[in-house]
Length: 122
Image 1 (cartoon, helix red, strand yellow):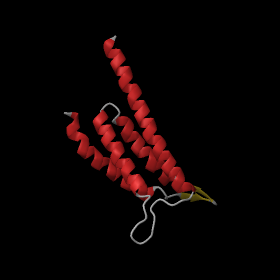
Image 2 (image 1 turned 30 degrees about the horizontal axis):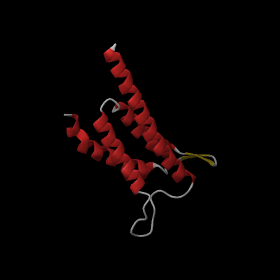
Image 3 (image 1 turned 180 degrees about the vertical axis):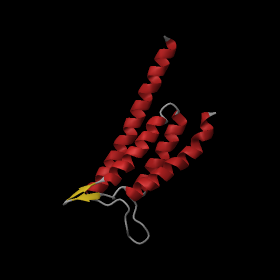
Image 4 (image 1 turned 45 degrees about the vertical axis):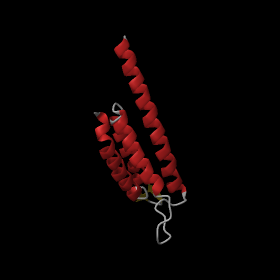
């Protein structure tokens, strides 16, 4: 029954990925220093959603697939020669944080499932 939610979770992951790519470069300027609130929000929001979905493996996999495919798809050159993720510290940091987020959510999800199975056997 959980597999019914696979396609909607892929769509949700794609929508969250589009919004993450859209805001990852936003920042507040305090004096001469930028505070990259967009990059933090762009990684924190899907991390929170992924951790909330850790009990439901098909939905989690669909969400992460939709999100990561959108983020990685934004690396491609657009029709006018523009890029959505630039090759600068913010772009590379967002990409690295995205991959780390996916690994973190998968590891925590696996540990949660393993703990639940061990508790059920005891």
